[in-house]
Image 1: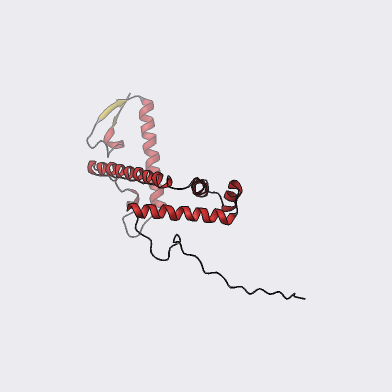
Image 2: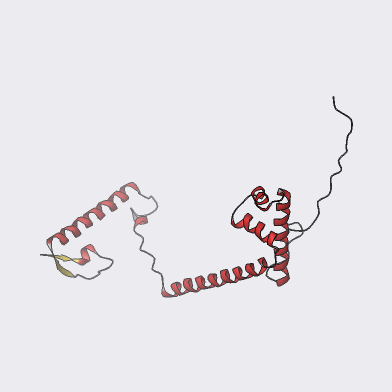
Length: 179
């Protein structure tokens, strides 16, 4: 049995001299670990020298202790975030219930399953442009529902989901054959 001073090996934890008798194997393991840690510190000091601080100081910052107040604030913030998420999901379910089955299935395929419009059109049995229009109309309907309920501010004039018809192109038809 060997007697070791815990202050020597565990200084931040034991600040007073505390002598403990331990088996020889445990004492040897503690001494070996202490030597390895000192060697590692010396190696870091050698390879990471800073000119604007005392040697090796950047590796010896004390761990930042979290106060009980900070822990309570984190828990309160987590609860608030959970409540906001729950409210958002309830509102989304309520708004999705107003969509037609076709709009709901296209919207689900596009945003939850990540399908392309071509895949949606093939699965639903209509054209790609019809799938695009269906998803667009579903988004517009959800947007209007959110605005009506006061859950969202009305969009600015030139946003993606406003119902404006693009101008038609005037193409000249040529009947003459090109040679």
